[in-house]
Length: 239
View (cartoon, rainbow, N blue to C red):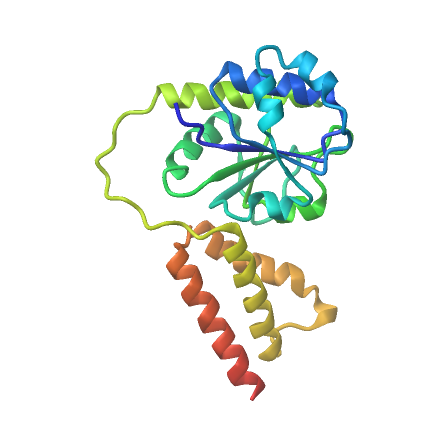
């Protein structure tokens, strides 16, 4: 079974958690993951917890920023109990099923925040949607490795439910980095048109407008056309 999702651990602090997460991934057939700015260098504790999964500890990709880790992904989902206007909230099962469908077109990333504070506001901004576990209010916090185990299980179950589809292939979806470029072009064009003003919270307006395009699941070609059109309009307005 080809792994449909890249697990991204952003700022992991505890190597034992990382080792236990590797074991959980191996249990359910996942193999691709990235560590963003881990707070440790000694991997011995991770290897001790990664029973029969030391190869995953050794093969983990390292990145300095979350943007670098997910730039090539067509769908980026953050694990968080928080809500953010314009971003869908999914449960683990719904996420797993949609991940399998989307992964046929482009890489999918599932992002986990650091153990102490979870995902930051800036990291959530980089995610297209959010996904949370419906825990009880008496104890809402879940250990990082346990969360990885839960999602790995749901991804495995979704894989077992898969049946061959005869649908026409979809165009390759826009990558995260292409949507970021589109966001910059949109912001520059709207400022040139005097639609935005620095004092009016234009960042939220741009994010809301871009959200409609993100939900439309633009193809790479469509994102390129939008980017070119917005930049052309911006240049014309400046002239």
